[in-house]
Amino acid sequence: MYVRLFHHDRCFDGACSAAIFADFFRKQVDSSAEFGLGGLFHQAKQQFDVSRFDGDQNVIVDFKYCGSSKLTWWFDHHQSAFLSKEDEQHFRDDHSGKKFYDPSYRSCTKFIAHVASEKFGYDASAQEELIRWADIIDGAQYASAKEAVEMVAPAMKLTLVLEASEESMTSKIIPLMTSKSLEEIASLPEIQASFEHLYQRHVESIDIIRKRSSLRDTVLYFDLSDTSLAGYNKFIPYYLFPESTYTVSVADAGFRAKISVGSNPWATEEPAHNLATLCERYGGGGHARVGAISYGAGEIERARETALKIVQELAGNAPADTPTQS
Image (tube, rainbow, N blue to C red; front, side):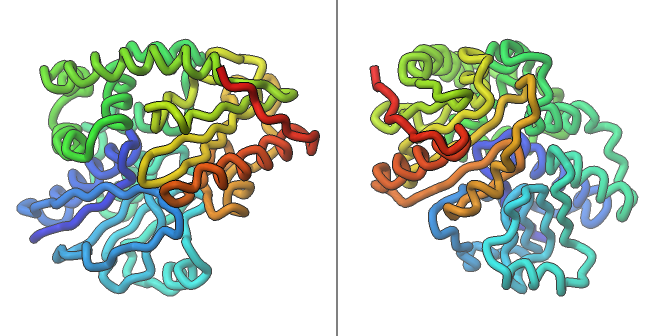
């Protein structure tokens, strides 16, 4: 059986979700199944290309729902899981017993493991390390921002590689995740070389974000659109500015202009805003504590305008200043 398995790309939880699903499927459904992996990104006017559903079974994990009859399995834990009311109704009307949604889970990996165990008899005990780290990383359950930024643990090293590398690297790592320890994977020469290169860029990004940031009340804003940084470690802002409650940033990924909105896991007070709900108003989504909005290629000005509106709202409707760039 050929299984087309789509996952949230450039995401540790997305990769772990794909690995856990493949392990479950081989153990409980078809031991001889072959998998074709495919990464999915959030984009402006997100539409699924159903022609890519070319498997005997087609799967999406840790990503939005697709209301297609070709979709066989689906698992997600994001508040913003549905592109439309029609897609949500399509999910509600499905009685296959193979599509699952629960936004209360911090990680999709743990959600898949739980459902597969409860409903299909899957024994996930051998994957405890993978499940635990996916939950820590996607749920931002670090002891401190320092721990999250310094990336000492093998899981953190793999997170950097997965978030910044090409899809080919992700496709190499995912099949190893259920047969090797995270330390063994991170120690592979190709992975180690990639990490060392990316870590140097990570260190440089800390200085760039420090210089680019401005703080209004407890809302931090910075614009990376004219730099080579298409992404960054989302905990750097709280490492540099522990007094901040929220972060709003703009970046140019080439194929999209992206606004990232996050909240400080170590803030002294619980954030008052649901960031997924806020981002949904601009066509984005995410979780209560972290969200994002994607616009089309070249729409940087539109992204900046939206980002500053969000800064203004998070800062309590105070007029949003345009941050000084260094």
